[in-house]
Image (cartoon, rainbow, N blue to C red):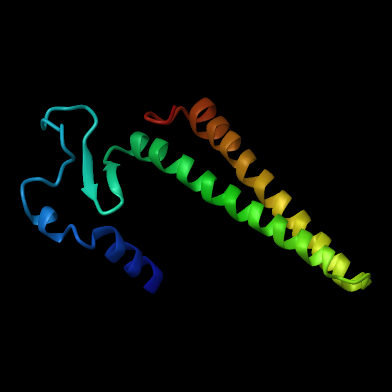
Length: 127
């Protein structure tokens, strides 16, 4: 819970004056546009659910891919510094395997979301 509070404080830090002012929408927003966006400290965030998901998914998959890459590098370093210890090599192999499996799960979750939400349930706004 404290993480969520800190996250929202980070998002809104430095922009408190624009939250209470008339310029809460991003520049170029005329009020009648079909794609409204809110101006925050990390940039313009779409308000509508479909646009927000389309904005968020590349960021999430980039973070997941980066973490997986770093864990694989960490596992390779553990293997190279294990000095032939079977337990250390096994732990490093498990780290690399876990990173690869986590990356594959995150990739397949996008396909499962599309299959269930769009093709089966026909939820509007998710393309």
